[in-house]
Image (cartoon, rainbow, N blue to C red; front, side, top):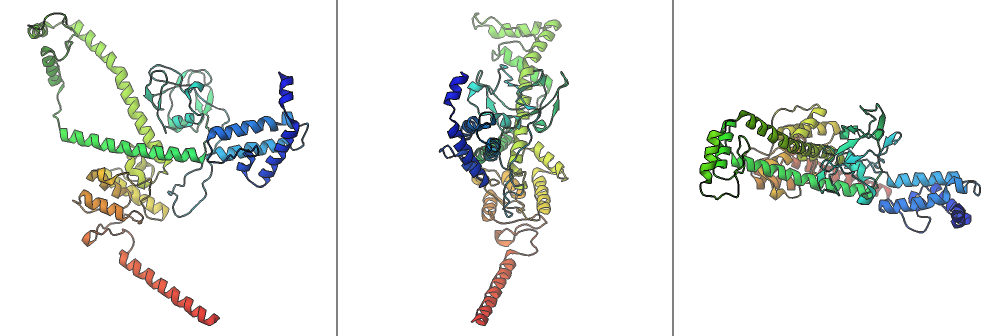
Length: 479
């Protein structure tokens, strides 16, 4: 096999590729480095294409093979590694929303020393997640562990996230507790006392941009669903039943044949018996159902049956909270997109910035917007990411929350059409929260500007006219 491999290896081609790699590296052209084989590779190419080009060149340029034939083999191989890392490393999003300063995003990277791809299992069937035959890319592990995505088990088709998944130590394979906040830290295993980290797989800018769009769309849909559920619950306004009332209601349903088992002991009448007189049989059973041991056994069985369902519901709620926080961090942690946060995550965001968490949701968003405007030295603005997908599908409380997140204070009693008009008219406007509201006629006043918009426009016109006059004087002097 070694002889066949030596026959397939072409030293002349390897030296030519090494020289081309060094030339492209000197031009600081990482895309040119990976494209020396003739296939164009860029930062927008799929990860599989980038990796294939890298592995093909690595086999040719490895110093163990090329070192005795070309003096610059080691330097060429190092240039190839740097080019691959540059193209696949994700950029860091500007915390200010990418507006105004125009800074070049820096690649997000950290050392993977003592880091492992830990084993993740499905919480329902205990099947291993992310196996090679699942069709998932390596970077999907980073998405899951950071709480950015949920996945579906290939075996039982159960959907789960990072909080509901079962995680294992890579050293002893014992079950461990995990939270996305630990992804960039070293963790101590309580079973084997081993210390390990979690591997970070780099992704390209195109993949990260697609992930950001997916996360934004999902969070907007979930926020709409939460508001719709809250509206339905408010409309229903069912009276809260006591435990005794729920027990009597369950007994009545059993007598009427709407439930199969006795709510006290679990007795189920024979379904093969005729329906005539069935109500009397069930009622007679309830009158004689006084066996305390049977009732206690039935309660234990019901509690044991409900425990996994409750645990699964709690894990699903934890997954949603974690994904909500991770999505907000991915979108830049700006106050303009804070209207997408759940109430729990909104309180956490206010606490991190030293903002008071008292009052309603609208008040918290307003304080958060004011705090960010003070830190950045600029007022809030509405961007494509922070704007809702469909303003007309939102309720009045939702629209008021979006206004507060963008630094706008609508008047009390404003309807949906007025709020939509306010948001649409200020799509590119700056706003701050330092008192005030709407001017007469329904026009929004930019708060904290020290004056109204007309005065600002007049000042700009005067400066522009003055500049034209000075320019005309200079032309006359030069002529």
